[in-house]
Image (cartoon, rainbow, N blue to C red; front, side, top):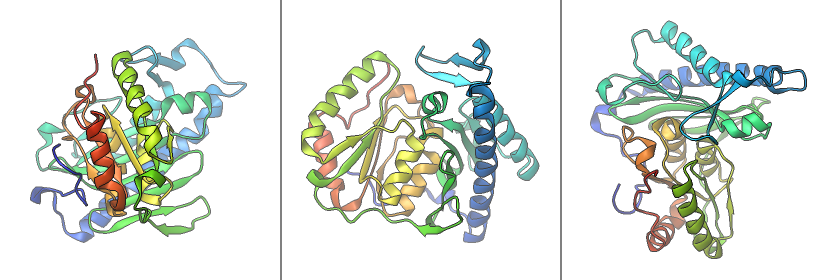
Length: 303
């Protein structure tokens, strides 16, 4: 990922599909994400409420002790995989919990799934977690949906078809980035890794960035951060070390709302520390120059 972010997701020719096929993949992504979100919404009080399990086997650690996976994460991914097997039999799947091989999929439509993005928020009952489902082809997103579970809001996009949000009351909003032109007046979102080394460096970068922008926000769910750029709820977002399931749907939604993007290859593991940036067009050049100045445009591998 070199140079200033692009104005769109710039898909390879191999990712192209007819608009009607893109629209159908978008419909499926929305259906899957909303069905999974309903499951997450139901299960949280059952597992973590006052009468919930709170059992040792309800939460486990992954690569770092502070990085949890819950029984609801695995249940939800299993549900999405089951539904995909019914609706799109034979399509490859890459899931955060169940794995998969995006590189081996070639030009096949591949579903990239994060059953709960923002698991720590989910665990604590903070309203900032989502289900993310994307259809990729040739390593590029062509359709995707992100459901803000607590708010019952669905963000979705199809390549060349625009981005929209449907709230819990069914109100539809077509999304566009903010028309902001000054970085000093911009609200910037970011996130932090679980590894101590990378987290410490990210904190240093925030300290250098904070005096140069309106303010910083840290929600804890990359998919929602990208959707918030699309909806104008923040002006930009950057983070190191995301995996494809973290950004596959949200990045397309941001791009279709007019954001400029810089993304690592979808096959690059998050441990490599590649940088994801999504920003309103009017501040992208200035933001990129600042990120370069503070050393943020280079990869920040986990250690």
